[in-house]
Image 1 (spheres, rainbow, N blue to C red):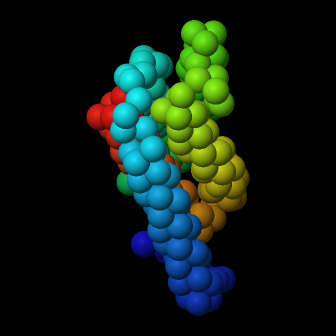
Image 2 (cartoon, rainbow, N blue to C red):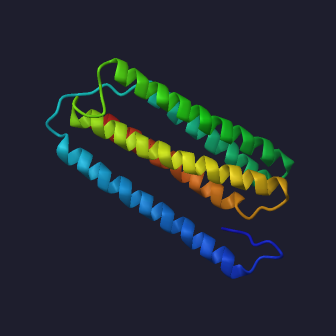
Length: 179
């Protein structure tokens, strides 16, 4: 998974690998618990309308993940450009997410007070957005290091970004199934 650089001990690589896996397992457990709470507390409520921008966001994340993966496979200067495209698409995802929340708000769906389903929709997508901001920071760090010729963080950033894309697809599926 993680490649060591010539001046880096193998133990550091293993520690980073373990930290990434622990992070992804922790996030999975968080969203698993939130999903169970969502399904358990909202089963009797009426239907809600999932914003169409959520589907566009899915396509944005899939495209960003593909760009990042192609750059990782290429491992040349081309990967810097594709990583920059991924960063831009991640920013676009956050803008579209904010716009979807604004649309919900203008339709009278508020974080608290409207329904538990709407509250969970805001919370689940908000927590995902917060992790995406962290992922963008990690991608920016990897991009900066890659510009210096250091591939240390690149592979980990790719794995985490793919994880966030799969997590979003799961969340959207869950919201559609129980909307």
